[in-house]
Image (cartoon, rainbow over all chains, first blue to last red):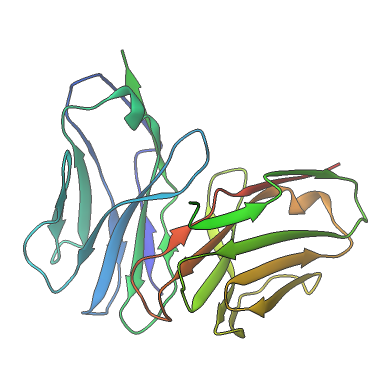
Length: 114
Length: 113
């Protein structure tokens, strides 16, 4: 069975700092997708970034980038120049190419301090 | 324009009641989902519908019944509500079954007293 582990329940950094959230997963599949979702206090679930496992290049979306290590089954999210609006729960999620179910991590609560 | 909308946003009700949560997407997607997020923030899929047909029915009590009148709507009806049903329920949609991106609604916080 596929599992997703986020080992950091909570993190806090100062505004403008860089922060990295960790995520590891377990699968025997070769083709899959990985995602980071953000859930701010408003509760809306927002897709931050996604990575296709067949792509070696790490995905980047503005201040958000990932470090995808397929062999190590690691998918960390780096937030550069953090902003107060980045304060949220961040969820790592996994989806197999052959299956449409999102498997979720437990989430990391990120607090950006002014 | 809200892509995936849910009503109501908040729902407080007593044990034993029957309630419904509505979901609508205007993205033209074929597949819709219901997730439950518990007090520890863990998300678990409950149902998935593809073109109005049930695809996933994870081990949820049969008190929960999804209804899809058309592919833009997936409503969740809950009978005989229990305290343990208190959670945030998210609706989501994706372009088609197996699409890698899912778009989420704002969530409905259900509190059973």
